[in-house]
Image (cartoon, rainbow, N blue to C red):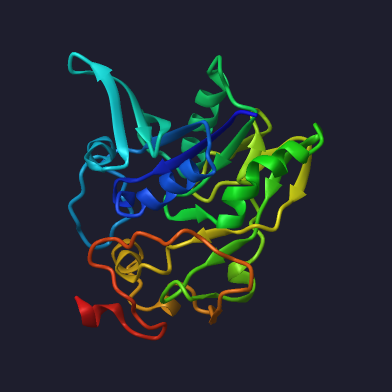
Length: 261
């Protein structure tokens, strides 16, 4: 079975992207595709300086370049072939369609696609069990939804209730079975049957509070999610320890991030 993973990125995603790419490499997928939306579409309320995605990826120890005579013929991340596509961002929906159309056009296109956002990783249970699970599915099952776990404060707490529940979009699907509306808050269209798989996707947007403030101008968690509540991690949910972005620290759930700036 051939599985590819992809991620759409903004320039301000570079400090969380290592977690995402390394999670895809641990599955392991057979190829990773990164769609770079360019330098002009970051979602920042407070300015920070970032390298372009390609330049940043090349600066990381996890990235290996293969070539000769100074000409790079292939990138690898964690040993997995990596393709960097550049497509100016219009909306997340259009970026996803761009990635999926490119994947579908390849002569060696995969059987299944794994989609993660830059601030997400698969749980250890998903990473280790994904291949055998997908191989067990009937041909008419075309896409799979998973529950999300939104981390809060540290890696021992999460949002509870609806904020850590089933996603409405599938992140695992057969090639050609899924498309998106070309909108910022994209709608997913699919053909065939949908399955549910309980291993979770781990979401870090609300964990890294300095990023949350810079991106969304949210100085407290509740200024981003008014009805969010914090609780412990459910039993049986694990993930590879996260790389925390430079400048991030544990900030208590009700604390104001601005006191640390």
